[in-house]
Amino acid sequence: MGEAPAASRGSTSASTVWQATDHGLDEDWRNWSGSLRFRPSQVEAPAGEGDLAALVRRCASEGRTIRPIGAAHSSTPIIATDDLLVSLEKLSGLCTHDKARARATLGAGTELKKAGDMLLEVGLSMPNFGDVATQRVGGAMGTGTHGSGRTLNNLSMPLVGGRLVTATGDVRSFTCEQDPDFVRALRVSFGTLGILTDAQLQLEPAAELHRQEWCTTLDECLPRLDHLADENRNFDFYWYPRSDEVKLRCLNRPGKSADYSHFARLTEDRTGYPHQVIPKHGGLAYMFEEMEYAVPAEMGVECFRKVRQRIIEKWRRTVGWRVLYRFTKADDSWLSTAHGRETVTISLHQNATLPWEDYFADIEPIFRDCDGRPHWAKKHSLTAAELRPLYPKWDAFIDLRRRMDPDGVFLTPWLRRLLGVSA
Ligand SMILES: Cc1cc2nc3c(=O)[nH]c(=O)nc-3n(C[C@H](O)[C@H](O)[C@H](O)COP(=O)(O)OP(=O)(O)OC[C@H]3O[C@@H](n4cnc5c(N)ncnc54)[C@H](O)[C@@H]3O)c2cc1C
Image (cartoon, rainbow, N blue to C red):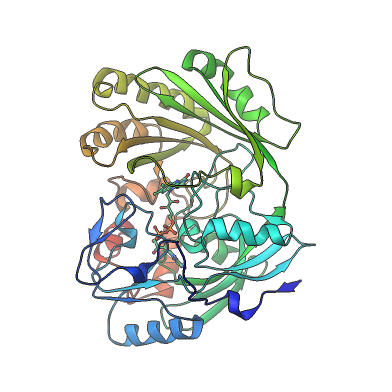
């Protein structure tokens, strides 16, 4: 078990990472893509857990509300507030690790890319990442961020313990061994049960992955889909509406990659550790807006075919952006989009400078007809009445939230509508 030097936690050292405290109060706040704007009345970045707890206590006693923020990559108003916004950016770093059990505790404000670098130094790795690693640990977990792989869970599932500042300003330690239901509720809870300060994660020994990307047509990809998903550790595909071509993204342990040159053209080939080769690094060429729904895996292809048909009929002339098809293993987190079912996610992208509203609104009913659950951080139109039937543990979550935060310190009007909590 190793202990990190105190200086690596609560550090205020200069960073190129997105920082809440770089933004002024006299201007609108924007999320990553710019589609979400709000103006908090106060922004704080506490230097440590004690300061955060005192801040929550003071705020609660004044009847105010608090929203924690990670790297502002969400595009639903789960980060928006006109009251106090709290950034965890100073609660970052590797706190402890236990290589034998493949567990480590990270400050909730740690950027995922940095988490990957620090864990690698002690021989550990997170099993999976999404398309970028610029999110912070608490933010990525809070919304059930996921990558792709039939045998891989979302990024919230590794949470097995940690510390949380509750609505009363108390600090609560928890472990999945002692509080299994609490951890199942907390994993995907977008800051409505409290503010995570330390996250203990179940990891795996660091090992390299071989990444290959292949270009081919949809007609070559779809009949092989099951096989591709089984054969690769990480697998997903992008479909490009204008050309009807697809890009297959496959990652495997070195020496385990299959050869698809009989039906596809190799366009990328490199090897590195998971945080180096699963997400993309460096600036993205364009900002985008996204709607993503998680559907039962057995309905994935049918849902995709309907989405594709509709795009070809109505949107191909105006929307050339890709559609992403991914896989996630079933889990037991109460509000995870993969709760209780093997899952396929299908996401629509549109250039952030172009209209996206009508496109997303037109396709959303197809996702809903397929029993789809919307990604908590991406555009959707659902509120409590529609969400409740989708989640078997919805009522249990709502009840727990009410008991933990009866006065709604961690709620906003938008979150009240989302969760069906009256004012
Ligand atoms: C370019 C880009 C690529 C993306 N790729 C993927 C992808 O591949 N897969 C995927 O699933 N999603 C993806 N997303 C969505 C993204 O992962 C989520 O929006 C994620 O929540 C963002 O993390 P964040 O640190 O920016 O958190 P924020 O957006 O700042 O916050 C997210 C939620 O977490 C809460 N929160 C933050 N910190 C804490 C804390 N310490 N304690 C309690 N609650 C907290 C916030 O209040 C908020 O409700 C992508 C987004 C972008 C912009």
